[in-house]
Image 1 (spheres, rainbow, N blue to C red):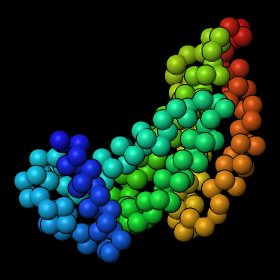
Image 2: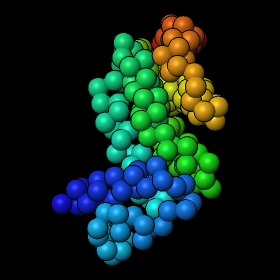
Image 3: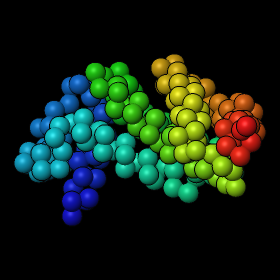
Image 4: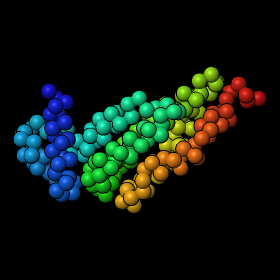
Length: 188
C-alpha cells in the first residue's frame, strides 16, 4: 500500500509540473491532486524535495535494470537520457531550482552504478584494488554526468544516440587500459 501511495504522490507531482514550476508547487497542491491528506504526504516524505529524490531513485533502478555490462553500458546510458527526456518537466524544474544538487546526485549515482559494473566486468582475472576500480568508475562518471548536465542546460536538443556514439568511441578499450595500469601483478 505504501508504494502505491508514493507512486500516486509522484504521479501528482509530475502532473502538476506540466502546469507550473517546482518552486510554485506546494504539498497542498500535491495532496489535493492526489486526493489524500497532508498527513499521508508527510507520513511518506519530509517535503517535496524528498519526493523528488524518491522519484529519481526509484526510476533509476528501473532505467538501468540489467544494463551494467561492457556490452550494454550504451543501452543503459541511453535509457538515462530517455528517462530525462520523458521526465523533462521534473528534470528541468529540479535543474533550475535551489535543489539542483538532487538531480546531480541522482545522475552521479545512477551513472556510477552503471560504470562500476562495467569496470568490475573488465577487471575479472586482474589483481586490481577495489579503490582503484572505484577511481576509474568515478573518473568516467564525472565525464558522463558533465556531458549530460551540459545537454540538459542547452535544452536537450542534441540526439542522445549521437552523444553515446561519441562516448563509445572515446571509451573503446580505455577502461581495460586503465585497469592494466593499476594491476598489482604487473607492478614492480
